[in-house]
Length: 228
Image (cartoon, rainbow, N blue to C red; front, side, top):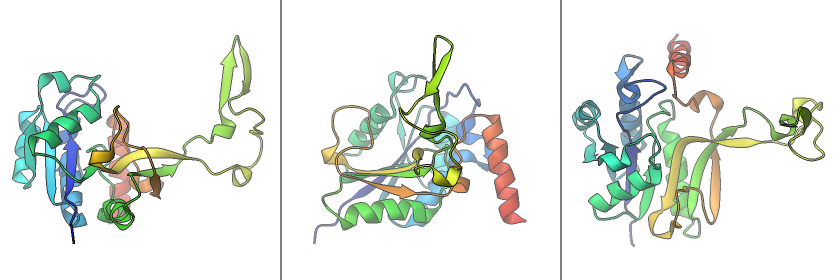
C-alpha cells in the first residue's frame, strides 16, 4: 500500500513589526517556535518537519530541536510576502511532498491531536483536497454593521443583530493553527483552503494567535491557569 509522505512546514521569518523577534520570544520560558516544533513532533504524523526562515537565531533554535532548516531568500521574507510562496520554496528544496501541513508558529497552544485530526481526516478520504482548523467567530456576521455616509445598516442583509447569541446562526473563522493539503492538487494562488474541504473546530483557548505583546501575555495567562 502506498504511504503518503507528510511534510510539515513552519514559516518563521525574523521580521515582525507587531512584536519584534516574535518567533523566538519567550512563552512559558520557551521560544515561541519551540511550541510548534514540539507539537509537530508529538503528533507522530509528520515525516519531516521543516522550518523556513531568514533569521539565524530562529535557525539555531530550530536545529537544536531537531527540525530541518531551509534558508528563506530575502525576496520571500518581506512584510508583504505570501506564506504560500515561502512554502513552495521550502517544499521544492526537499523535492516535493504528498501531504503538506502548514503550522504557523504564532499558534503555540494548538495540541498534537489538532494536527492528527487534520492529517487523519485527509488520509482517510482520498477525495478531500484541503483541511483547516477553525474557531467560533469572535464577531458573528449577524452582529456586524456597514457604515456608509454616516448611516449604519446590518452587514448581512435581513439580519437581526438584537437576537440573543444562542438564537444566531453559528459562525466560525479560520484560526490559522493547522492547514493540511494534498500538495499536487493545490490551485494557482495563495489559498490553503480549496476544493473539497473539511473543517476541524478547535476551542478558543487553543486558538490564540500571537500577533503582538498583548496576545503573548494572554497566552501566558492561559498557561498559568493550566499549570495552577
